[in-house]
Image (cartoon, rainbow, N blue to C red):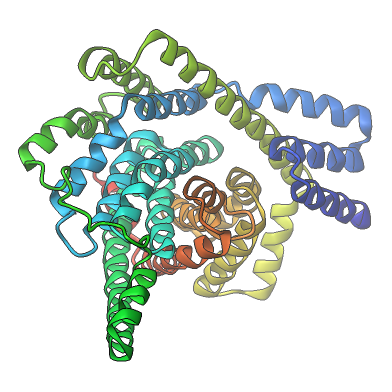
Length: 461
């Protein structure tokens, strides 16, 4: 039996490596394991029943609605207005455009709940502007991957909704748990990017001084190469957006800035639930698109509907496959076996947390984020209960690891988005992503040792 199970696990990993859709891969593994335990007929019966019940939840209604709202936000131009506002306030700083990218990504994440939407939208908006400001491809990659990773932790977060669904935890409290770590990430990302930018500029200055000693003509040509500009290119004039008045910039971005205030404020104050907040976000974005900005048309709305439906269907398949796999993990008493090992080894809480984070980090390198969540929660939630850990605190720890999975090769989806959108070689994107990876690990350590970072805001609700 053990060899049979190991065989299906190997097949599952091969399926994921082949590019087969993740949801179908999870379902395939679940049916195979059920067949090993119960026989084919019973496996099909249990699998079909679980597939139906996995989507029969009012909580999950929030996911397609937030996806729809994210697509609307992208189509209406809210992201561009937020980026322009951030540039107006931060663009005059030496690395201000990179900081503006991260800050606007944080606000955008608070409106969409999706890292992939945030990374793709902000990448399309910010990468051309960062290139004009002569940021290197490595720093561009650092800024976009950092901003893209915020969508998983700054509420509303699709992963938080799934965690609440699987563990029967309050979605509102889970949303609030991500606020302080998310804001801390924005600040530390910005500081780290600023430091790297200054270090890179000093390196360029040193190279220019060395070249100037060789000769004026050689130095002039080399300076063009070092700066990354084209020969004969003119100096870049004043940025019209950066010189825009701050009052005008805030006026342009006002409706976009109000979206997270309405969504998160309503949840925090108990005015509406997460699914209701998602519905309000959709209506709000449609009103802004049709009436205020007038960038949304019926034909564009139809395209947004098609795109949102496609993405929602992909998520639904993963939810079905993940729920089936979670069921077979429980059926096979795998969590109980893990608890028996923990009891026998008598791990200390700190050592156990270290082991869990190492395993999650390694799994995140090879599993898609939703697959990682559906594999980890059934295995680890019983451990959380046995150790007496705060469930909301552990949710943030899992979420930080999910963020790491987004930007670590070989399965880091945000890496490939940045590479494709920016036409940047993947090795440079990975090099740039090291910055947010180190910052994420640092904040993860802070959350582990200072649980109040995750639990204080939820405790006020």
